Image 1 (cartoon, rainbow, N blue to C red):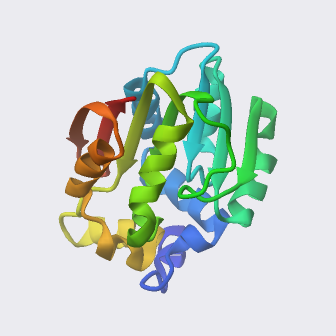
Image 2: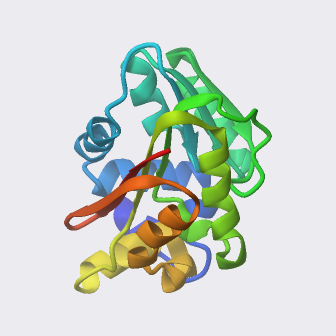
Amino acid sequence: MVLQHLLHGHQAPGVIGRARGYEALTALVLNRRRLYGRLVTLADIRPGERVLDIGCGPGYLTALAARKGAHTVGVDPAESMIQLAQRLRGADDCEFRVGRAESLDLPDESFDVVVSSFAVHHIPEPVRAAAFAEMHRVLRPGGRLLVADFPPPRGRVARHLIGAMTGEAMSANPVERIAPMVGEAGFTAVTSGEHRPFLHHVRAVK
């Protein structure tokens, strides 16, 4: 019943436009603890590091990184997401702020790790290159980047679940372009992989 309610009318903006709906749906269908735990492992987050989570949404990954002993900052363009993140995860020693990936109000070389999970498809195509350039700018030399997004869904159920979260944004989400764009932004040691059904990731080093 809850899932049916969340899926209703998802063709337009997706529940990404409704912070509480997004939080509920990701908890319900993504096996969130396992999925985001995998991302923390892939990012190799270590105690004492400064971690930036771009497109943090309600802050689940930001909080997991903080529990590894990292100093974490979550950025999202939606004020409703940031407000929910502060309410739900402010006690996890996380800082949350409104901001856009393509124009980060953060100092150069100020983070050891930059992560972005399931957010690239929401960055408008004309400014995606600028967003990756900003990720490069705020990382320290030798810093690590992890970008994760949805691979093209296979099957009707997967299409509905991912569509419920993303709406029409997935129609312009060629994940095979992420790795080349990361390289074009100046990153090295670029690798990619998939963990079906919900995860395509790219890792790189500045």
